[in-house]
Length: 487
Image (cartoon, rainbow, N blue to C red; front, side):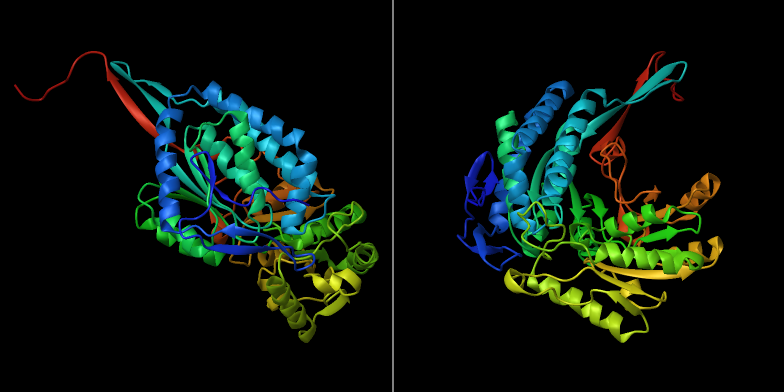
């Protein structure tokens, strides 16, 4: 597949870095080099921020309806180019082509369409004070920095840029160095849709590039998606200039399956919560708590279906599981699998590298299930970010809630039960920013998304995102003159 969008995009132009330095973008399926990508330094970031600041001042004067039309046109263009962009995403991430048209391109288009649709309806408040009144204005922050993760690069670029642009901001976006391609493709889409130059800039690089963005005095807000340790560093860096931050970090989410659950549905959810996108999803329900009375039946159905999953070329429509993002990450995941084998957990299936033929060239591991797990095991405590499921048993609701909440994370949770009262009671008690009832990993753009505890700060998506890309200004209007205490 020919790859065109490999440069940076600053002030409406494709460009190399000032230094001329580059880095390799590697195909995780076969270890081959896809392209060389320009490595942005401080001067490149500064150039992007300066361009964004100039463009934002004019963009803020556009009416919200005018801004919304550009976003809706961009959504249409994403859909018109779905096959090409989905293939680019599968090439870059290793995720199967049967996922990326819907989970990436359509998800991104829905985001642009949603925020384009609500842009004209963003309003302030009014209050009558008898002799005066006040109103509030929702005003843009200015230049926002977006730093993306490598698992859903296009979706994340849309989730960050759409609300920023809809509310009158500009954005400098850095995709993860492992998946740089679709953010620059999105830049081309925005330009074709009529977005003025400078409003969406893309710079490439590693931690140093991100740090240049978070420390830049011209940046008003940082929105970061990634693992918790990096998030803390980003937040600390942004604190130096009191930037606003949104942090969407990691998780070790519980999926609780009660005895009255539909077992086939619960098995489906557990598989989606662990093996979709090779398990490289921050919300994944990797701690599966199963009522002890149904454990044996649940595990047998789960094992049978898991062992039928098809690994192979991500571009093959029949492939269900692709490679991990890199061989380095594969070694980390294999290390956790070895820890699981060395513990008292029971390996149900998988637990090793997938080999044979073309698989030998890439970063492939088998979907893995451990049963008989305990809460103190490393595979149960740590975010693995791979297709590794830990199954635990419980006896009553109070017990499972206590154990499910016993984690530093709080991004997501799920539960399966036919008892409606229990469903709402448990959903209220789970310490998580998102809770799914009789489902898992469904993230409609209309629903706010984000975590609690160590899983993040702020919310993306829904009307809630507007709160994090605007600042409220209060205006007091006197009607009867100044009440002065002095002669």
